[in-house]
Figure 1 (tube, rainbow, N blue to C red):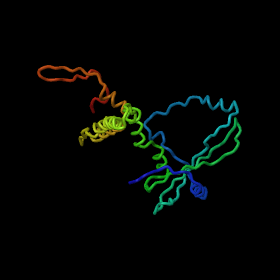
Figure 2 (cartoon, one colour):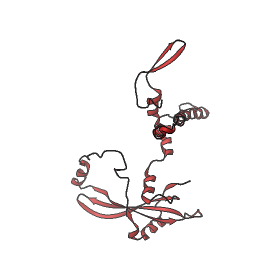
Figure 3 (cartoon, helix red, strand yellow):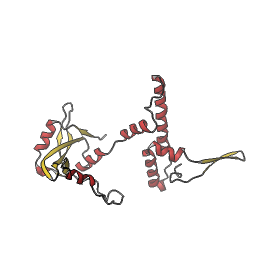
Figure 4 (tube, rainbow, N blue to C red):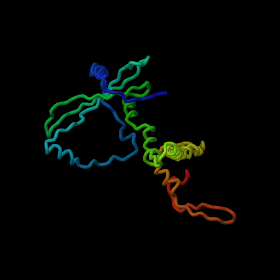
Length: 232
């Protein structure tokens, strides 16, 4: 099992990062636009920045982000771990004048030795699936709503609401994968697994359908098209 955790900027870690020579730091390289299949948009004029300068407000601007790494053993651990130090150069300005610059440190601890330091930071910055799950249970299926007046009843309500979310995951895992079309089928399964519940409800549950009883058969005739009907 591999992990990446954000770590508190404790005094000993800051001192260790400051002891690292300048040659060990390199500029942070984030995911480039070439890696993301989108078209770059033209940035609008930064009206807020102009107002801040005109009114002589104090503001913080990020000048650079540099990365270094070193080994560190937390107090209650029996082995060393890999620590990635992200050093941000913050410029403190007032209007057009630069007052001073300062360094702020952010740390990430991991047991992964394969990813680069930049990849570790990028991985840590992405929201984890557990946070997404909590968000969906709280907002969309309202499992934490607690609408009734007893503890056991609210527990039952939360369980039923969580099962509604689980049904979505089961729908994704039950999608067949044909070897010939493995790549598009796997992508279809991934999209359904990561789909938020509101989109799932719109795409698979709340769809207009005409129910026809004829010849001892019941038929469901879908009246509109959406791109997810194939999976449905």
